[in-house]
Image 1: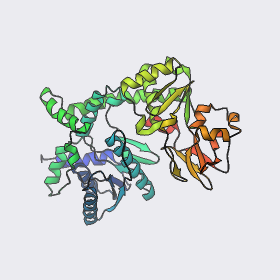
Image 2: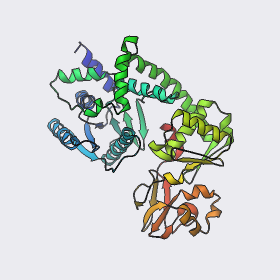
Image 3: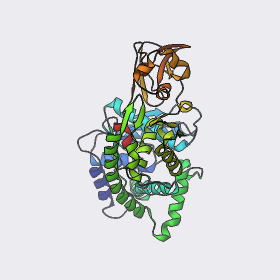
Image 4: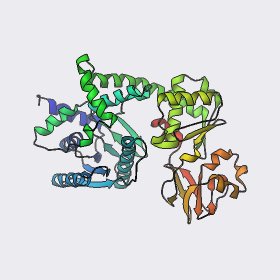
Length: 400
């Protein structure tokens, strides 16, 4: 390894993580996250680690156990969190990523850890930019991964975005530290694997990980300025009610990129990873919205100025106390949480007094016991229950 290379890596850790805090490290056992763990310890941080077992490969449980053994040898407190899932519909890698971040954030909150470090490198950044190009992404899609962001009280940091994947592995080799190679990284089914191979093919043109990371940095600066404008427009022209958004027609007088980013953020807030639209589909939805036409896309529905959940896309029943439809917390004495729907709304005699459209109320949560509706708080049938969105659009949507 070149002289001074270790000092550079340590400098990235010091610059990328806040001092005097316990740092949570998301540890897969791969070269990037393992280097992150050792470098963070080398700097002198107090560290705890968490591994997410996605249960997508037969070897994953044994690998998580090996990571736990390695952490014990280092004196690092470690936990494994398991992604409990059935058949995964749609984009498997994106669903796994969303689940991983949710499990890590939950672990950090339980442990009282305010900062979690992720081991993404400039190679990951470059691949992300290429994937954005393949999707015809706009400014936000081509800005790459953020160096840091906050999610419900947990700050996620990527201190090694300026380090190369092979650079980190060289550092590990020099210390005799072995890592786990995930075979899915070589699986051509996955877009990131194909992006990795495309990046190698582009190197003779000077399109390298370093160059694409530099481009992403320039675009991220521009994106920050646009995001500030989007937040201001949302504050003036978007009103959140009962888990839906009422969008003022004045939005369509704003610059194209501002309204594109606002509508995209709204869809992600409404539908999670399901709500991430492709550029062409988003353009068609926005055209319909601007003309006042009804439209649906990616689990979302637009009608008469309201952007809401699409009825057929809402989540299934969950036990009381669990998150419903990925967004709602419902409290009550008994029952299960499921959509109010066309069966439940007629059982709420005061729903019109809420002043909310029927279509909005249909996709709000109800508290049921069999066929009996016990409560529907958003539709005026309180029944001793309450329901709230886990995080409002103005706090959540514009940061994702």
